[in-house]
Length: 210
Image 1 (spheres, rainbow, N blue to C red):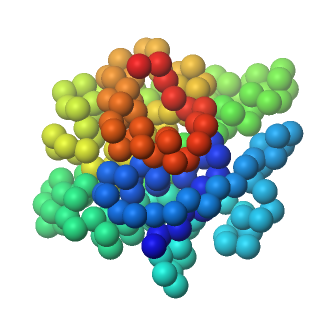
Image 2: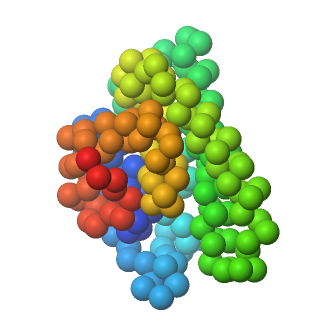
């Protein structure tokens, strides 16, 4: 049985969703954030010394980092689901999106979050952050302008991995000018497997109005 060490309101929600899409059985071990600091509890360090989520345990194997977990679950348990043929050009695009999510797209969103807490002291940084956000979100919106999913015509692990980027952008009020990205996120959040994952993961603050 796969165990998902799930931190409330975190990237680990998409791992629950992925497992629901794959139809793989799993157990959720839930951790709550500190109400003042919003940090993960120290108990999580017993599983991942970095104290971060998501983490999965699959038998004797422990896997951290959401991109690595998405890849692992699809390769080991997907039976060919949710990824293109590894010999195809579409697979190269798929891997690109897996890497883009955390390698590029999340950085300006995190900077926007942290710098926003500085108040006026952070004001000089906002033009550069907003420029990068417009660059990455515009790139995503354009990629989705003529397709329902990021790779091909069906959901893949790339959509799962990229979903948190759009969700965090939505929470920060950055989606209004990106209609294709917004429609894609609504499409993902309406999926039965996504809703089933919400039921198992608990309250989640990154939903957008249907």
